Length: 94
Image 1 (cartoon, rainbow, N blue to C red):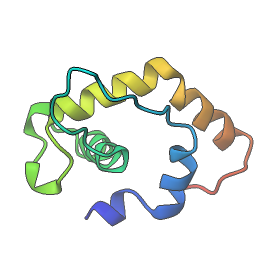
Image 2: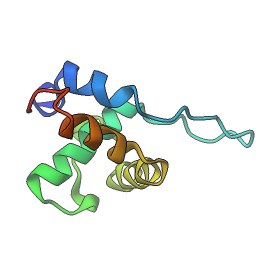
Image 3: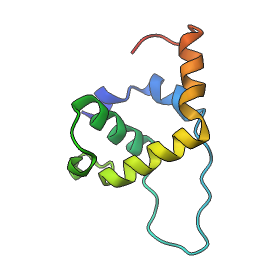
Image 4: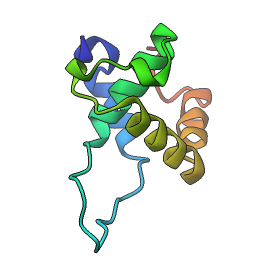
């Protein structure tokens, strides 16, 4: 299922625009990897389920984790960068 939601070439395109994450000096839980978080985001957007109902069986973390990552990437301008590439025709349609 996760492979169908996030093909490798799409992941490569988006991964190049993701900001680097710095670990907190306070420690805390290990961060869910970006690809898993993006898969969770795509699942919620594709199915229309509430973030709180994201199935943990997908291995994407919680819905709140995915929502926070989406918000973090929106603030960093990731989606604008990816959108510009798509509009320029440098990517194929998924």
